Structure formats: structure tokens, C-alpha cells
Length: 477
Image (cartoon, rainbow, N blue to C red; front, side, top):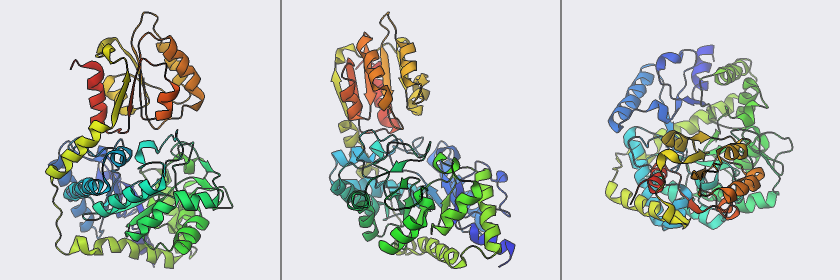
């Protein structure tokens, strides 16, 4: 294998953010075959976005690269297509509202729309069992906190999506019990092997029965499964020994993004890439074209050319990837059709049920230009031109916003969030404000902040539900 052949092979086992301009990526040096499409790569309409993806596919094929285009479209706040599509509600809201077969219909229609856009793989569903009430990153992204519900609705999501496209279950062996966000730090999980197996791993075992195309491994440390404190996606004990050998999984294994701080704060670019590959991961994800990616790619290349990287594992990873193109549903003339008559009524049913309002509704609507608003949702901040507070700043910022003259105070707390150390300060501010409104996705936060005059609890964080809440707050009915 010469250098260029090695580069071509490695290009099939890494994934990179779909570039806004292809001139930024040297495809000779980095012939990447897998791309994650985020909203910044899409246009404002379906047709323009579809054309852009089709043009990219043609460009890559002209260079001898057969691409796989992926998207992170879970529903709720994790959506890339809301500019031109009524994106799906959060998984928690779907599982609370719909029957399992209705959930399958939502995910089947979502996948049909994604196929129409030109997507091959959806990096969903989340099969995390949300056992931590104040989980800062999973929360509404999970189907719930009990195993049977997550198993059943996870099965429906997989079966629905696989009618049209491939899908990836995440975040093995479970991220629903953590108190930290792996985007920001390295979560440590002390759950016993028995708890992990009977609770958090169970939905993934079921997903394997339904031929899920891929499983994404988390960046958390699981002390019961790994003797060293390294993220699961870099752990051979977890990926190779447990997922591959013990559970018998032979589909694609994805890392979570190797750009996340749980990895970058503890491992160099080359080290992380080599560890992930040696752990038996098939697709190494990167969300930025940066030194993390280029350093990781070149590190793998050096090891491969020196004979220190398993060519057998490389060949198996490429073969697993090839199966995506060979799936009978996608190759024997089956053309999924999006039916809005099925999709929209179910989505609207979930949205109506997902918002609960308690307290003095007579204080609504509020004066939009005279309300102090602080939010942990970047989308809400953009829509309302308000402030966003980091975890450490939230109490201080709320104190600054307290208005003795009676200015209404809106506190909008949604994931990602960690408020344990701030609840008492929040309670004090809610108690002293003349008009306080809490909007949250966390039931425990609403219960803890009962001092608010009005609380809005929602299970759905999709842009459309955020818009409906904003309308309820500021517009007369």
C-alpha cells in the first residue's frame, strides 16, 4: 500500500463537517468520504439545499470518492433543517404523547424527507436512558427515564427511519446518567456493571435486533467497564471487548466528535485518533476542519505506513461502510415518499401536549420591550435579543437583572444546563421579583422554583415550540 492508497483508505474511516466551500479542503491530501451536514452548510430552501448536496456528491465522485452524507437530526433542539422543514419534536415529547406505532410513522416520514434531501445516514436516535433528572446534555433528547419506554420507542424510531435511510443509535453505553456535558468536560460514571447492563445498555441490545446500521460511542468514562480513565470511544475494553465481542455487534461503530473537550482536554490529536481506531471504532467523527482533524489523520497515516496500524481492522471498517450502499431497501428501487398528511398531524399533536402552563396566566401577554430575559438557549437568545448566561454566571446575571420597579423577569432554562449550585440563588430572585416567569424543560427545576409567578414546562425544545411559547408570552390571544 503506497501513501496515496493509504490516504484513500483512511478517508473512508473518518468523517468531517460538510464544508461551506470545497476550496477549503485539500481532497488529494485528505480524500474524506464521510461528511456530517450541519445547518450552516444548507440553504434556506429544500430545493437549494438538495442541489448543493447533489453537487457535492458529483464533485466527490469525480475524484473517485463515493461519499456518505450524514446529518444530526434527532428532533427537538438537535435539528439542522428547521429553516425549510417543520422539524420533529423532542424524543421525550414524542414518547409521552404518541403510541409507539405513531412514533414509527413520525420517524419514517422524517427519514423520507431526509432521503429526499440527499441524506444517507441520520445520527439518531438517542437511546440514552435519562436516569439523572438534571442531566445537562441529554434530557429531552431521550425517550425517557425507564428502560421499557426507551427500548420500545427506540425500536420504533429505528424501524421507521430504516425504511428510507441508515441510522445510528447513540451514545453507547449510555449518557443518560451523567451530571456533566461531555462537550465541555470528561464525565465520570460510577454506576456498577450490573446497572449499566440492565438499564443503560439494554436499549442498544434491542437496537441490534432491529439491525441498526451504526452505534455511536460516548466520551464518558465508565469505571465498571474500563480499568483506565479514558473516554469510552477510545477504550478497547468497551468497544472491542464489550460491544464487539460480548454483545456481538458487527455494524459500524462511530466515535462521538473527537473535537469535544472530553477528548481535546486530555488527548492530543494523533493520540486520540489512534486510540479510537485501535479500540475498534470504524468512523472517527470530526466537526471541524482543524488541527484536531489534520493531526489525527496524519497520525493514522504514519502508523499505517509504518505497519503499526491494523490493516485487517481497516479492511473490516471499509467493508462495514460498504454495507450501507448494499442495503436491499435502498438499492432495489424502493423510493420513499414524504407524506405531510401523515407527518404534520402527529407533530402538531405532540406539540400541543408538550407545553404545560401553571400559575398566574392573567399576567400575559407581557410588554416585549420591557421584560428582562435571560436564557440558556442560544436560539431563544437570538430570537429575543436577550442575554445568555454560562453555568457559572447564571445566578449573578439574574441578580443584575432584578428590577425593583417591577420589570417582568423571564428565566428560560433548557438543556444544555447545570443549575445545581444555582437553585437557591434562583429561588431567592424569583421570590423577590414582582413578576417572574420560569420556562424550563426540567420538572425538578420547576418544582424547586415554585416561587415563580408563572411556570411553563415543556418536553419539546424544537424551534417551532420555542416560537409558540414566545408568542404566548408576548402576544395577545
